[in-house]
Structure formats: C-alpha cells, structure tokens
Amino acid sequence: MKHYQKLIENNKAWADQMVAQDPEFFVKREAKQTPHYLVIGCSDSRVPLELMSGALPGEMFVHRNIGNQVWETDINLISVVQFAVGVLDVEHVIVCGHSNCGALKAAQGPTTNGLIDNWLSDIRNVIRWNASELHACPTDETRLHLLSRLNVMQQVGVLSRMPIIRDFWTRGKRPMLHGWVYDIGAAQLSDAGHTNDGPRPLARPGPVSPLLGRFSTSRPCHRPARPARGHPSPSSPR
Ligand code: CO
Image (cartoon, rainbow, N blue to C red; front, side, top):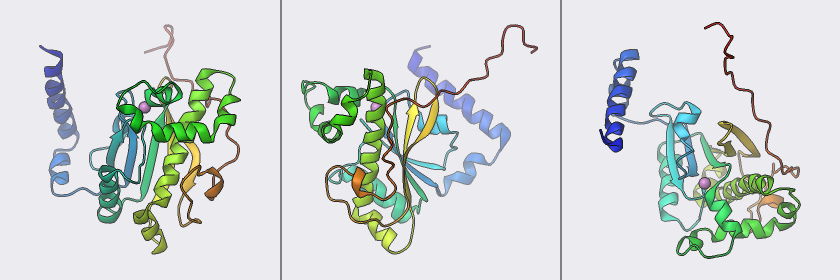
C-alpha cells in the first residue's frame, strides 16, 4: 500500500471507531456546526490543533498559515474571522504559535527566502520592536521561544484592532482573544500571557505590548517546565 493510501484506510478505521462509541456522532453534525473556538495556527505539520487539544469535529473552526499571522489586509483571514465571530458566534479566538517555528527562524535570518520573505516581513517587525529583549536571551533556543510568545502577542494585538472584533466588543459581545504557544517536544500547550476580553484603547499599528490592557511586562526568555509524562518503567505491573 502506498503511504498516502493509508490516510484513506485510517479514515475508515477512525470513523468506524467513532460510530462504535456513538452511532449518531457524524449524522448529528451534518446539518450545522456550532464551534466554540476559532483557532489561528501555524501550518506546521507538527502542530495538529484538534488532535493535540482533544477537540472533536464541530468544536473548532480553524485557520492556518505560515507563522500563525494576522494581517489586517489578508482577505482570507478577515473572511474567516468575520464568519467565525459574526455568524458562528464563537466565544474564543485563539492565536496558537509553537516552539521551533521555521517561519520565526527564517525571519531572524537574512532575506534570502524568495517570495516568502514578503510574508515574513511582519515577524521581522516583531523582532525589530523587541530587539533588546531578544538579544538578552542567553541561547538561540530561548530566543526563539521568546519570539514565539512575542509573535503570538503581536497577532492578538492585531486582532484586537480589527473593526469586526471592536464592533462586537462595543456591542458588549464576545469574543475573548487568547495567545497560546505549543511546545512540540513536550506536547504542551501554554498561555503566552495575553488574554483580551473587551474594548481597550485602540492600539496604533506597531508594537502592541505597551498599548494593550493585560499585557504582562514580565516576559522571561525561558521555556516553561516540561511536564513529566507517565512512561511505565519496565518493572511496572501491566
Ligand atoms: Co510555525
């Protein structure tokens, strides 16, 4: 069997398993979707948003691009936000970055990546605006981790300036905005330290950190402690 054909086989096995647990699971979801979350994530194949968060079909509306970016001029993303917030009435919009992101690595280097450098230009702004903090990080790894958090916060800031979001907040409605980071090696999701749940003074374009309400000024450049995972020892009873 070709490896790509395995995907179709896997789908059948997964569907059979789900139906065995709930015969109506898929039928109940066919008519409409009522997701609670819009997640804007990176296209990276190691960041399976639904799988890693345990979200079931119908719970998560998803948009992905390189570097989990929010551009006010991206008609694709604006349409997704408009539909998710305005029509589906999602309660939470989550920007999810991740460790060891290739987009963030590339943005730290010289502009020799071709067309994609245009797409990375906003991340280069994040690097420039936070240069002193990033330079203070002791290692490339910790610098990259801090950048992943700063990038997520920046994108949440851009979301908070979008007219569709501000219009809903003005009318006292949701959504709540979140910035999260996923540590690939530890399979651990964590809050990047920024939650925004209502109108704030309108941030001007540029570094968002001093201009938004709940931004923590404490941004240590270290990775969160990795949790101990439960691997049974060879002597453990089975
Ligand atoms: Co990435």
